[in-house]
Length: 288
Image (tube, rainbow, N blue to C red):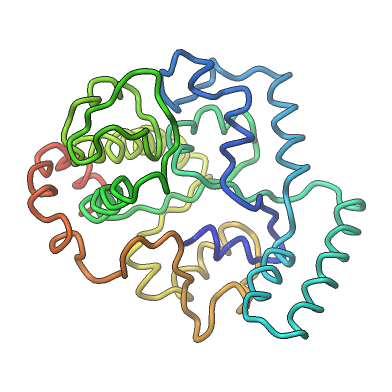
């Protein structure tokens, strides 16, 4: 949701989708013994890094084009004509462009922060934190949505209670093999916990270098414009009203069920209660 909002800025460029195909070209888990999605400084090499940066640049599109593409769905001949004109201008701009500011996002990147710091030495990071109970509940819903969020067909059989006989969804955490026969809520808790702990480990250095902006999901949803203004200032780009939907709302993205306050209690309350002791320390560190 935050990515789709920022990607509409005329000052930012982004890919049309998450960067799995780019980063997982040379770093797909199957090339690394199916260990995990984690990448560290030891995985960095200049030749591969140059290819990755070139591929990101080749695939990136300006926010003006992304905005026009989304707005085209509002229908109408005028909208379609506007999109065609913006697309032409974007093609011209790409040929003339020097360095661009790339907006990159995938939850898997929480396991790759040391690698990304080496790949993009001038990068700034945005940490969007959210109540682990709500996040894990959303992960459970995603797993239960069939193949919609499937990331991998792993080489070893899975017997995850509540998701039998299907592939792996979302990020692949270190030690995932220990979860191959676990209840679904334990799998989702481990995914959230591994990514959260990786971010918390990296935060001290990022804070010291003033390279990270931290934002609460709940604050963003409740007051979008007020929450976005200081973030955009941190990124060095101006606020543009067009990045928000009508009436200054945020766009819903990848919604399995309608959003509601504390939905996790109704949808997956008993399952979340079972994993609360495991996530308590991380929850406290995030302020929940």
